[in-house]
Length: 483
Ligand code: GLN
Image (cartoon, rainbow, N blue to C red):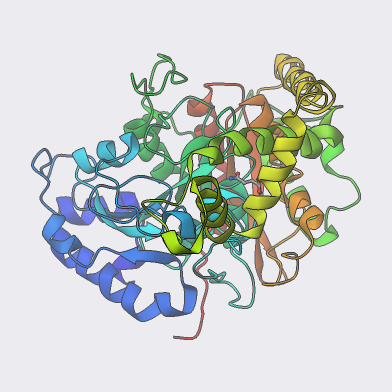
């Protein structure tokens, strides 16, 4: 087995046994990226000098991620490297600072291989709204990797980094993880600092990771979680020893299956894989029962009103003056016209669509009808989860209604694209943690099982997901694409 096929735990072990040096591993990844990534197009920027970065001043062989090659979704600010949010309006942005997550990973020795593609400003479910390139699904190069963290999911699936950072606002970690057959952890809202991560919708944006295994996600979360004085929404909840609490059986745990998630629109082949997954959870000792989350059907419209409203305000700061292809002074009459032109040229269609939707939903006379109403429905959705978690410990669902769709299939039909979030948006609105883990295959394409838990119950969530993962081994299967 090649070095790049190893997960985090295995790579660390090789270092400890001195079987390989971090420099060799970083070199192996860089040369694989050179060879394979032209087919996948997951990287927007490759840190060619990564080998020289192995020795960070604060890290040593004892550091938890010493010499581990990782990569960041291109919305994480990285000092000395471009950070574009896959948008033309930030094409020339080189932040002078690191996001908290980037700094934390660096401090424990991780080596940054570069920046990964995403939908523009993370708006999308296929990574096709990126202004720069279309990332391909390693399981089928004609298909999307999901989104918005499609670059992160594809890079992990194709062994182009050990793990990747990612963000999830309505499903952007879990859905691409499902499409690419990897593990995607979206922690509780506020569990990991958002400082230095370019915002999409601030009341929903959640930082997490895409990894090869649940055990790897547990290690990453231990490093990333915690309070940050630069992000007031991070809490002081205890950061547990997630990697030490993993389990192998599920005796005594109650798992609820929401009936609203097994409805029309769920692909029957996906349903079959998920039902088998649920049977596996039962075999491991969990008590399975049907539950109801009655407001599920309102989640997608509620999410799109709230997200677009927050997007319209967050996008207001981009004027295209310093970091994008700004218009020349002679081309415009005045300052307002310059902003107008810069934003017209700098933003893609999906971003513009949401700015318009959000501006409308927040405008005088409509705010009560749309934005306020959506906030009220959000409370109902949150209550569905609160009530359910009084009865069960976890909820299990499909992560997405389908497997990876074809490139181009949905990009001109926003409603179809938005429906890709149907099973992920509810947990985002409720702010509860979720994980997508490989559950099997439908016609050769990966299917993800989503597990959801109460707020800040990541430790138990990872424990259950781990038990499922090691008992099935679906995560061990690798895509075989033509080199
Ligand atoms: N697909 C969803 C959207 O387009 C989710 C995006 C995300 O989580 N960043 O809004």
